[in-house]
Length: 139
Image (tube, rainbow, N blue to C red; front, side, top):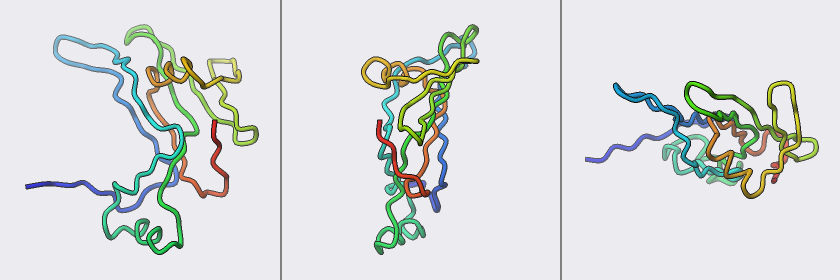
């Protein structure tokens, strides 16, 4: 027997919580393995139920497939007992990523090692569906 979980309707804003902490009877630790997630073009049409209104609209050509672009990430650096939270957000006006670290805001270069660091530290990912009135911003 096979079970399949399908989504009826997708939200305009999607938050993905990544499991970054492990708790067992003997061990409590932070998981810092890199998670490969899409920055743009997250297509969730395969997760939709066959009779979903979102799937039917996209098939009729009246709408688009539910494609999401990352617009923010909450990150946790450090250990379980001594860590620090920061945030990364994209500015829809200029298309650049910015790092929010306590009282400091600075432009973040998201290429190369910086992107890998985000993949290791990302804790919550914030996606927005394309077509909410703003064009997708590519970094």
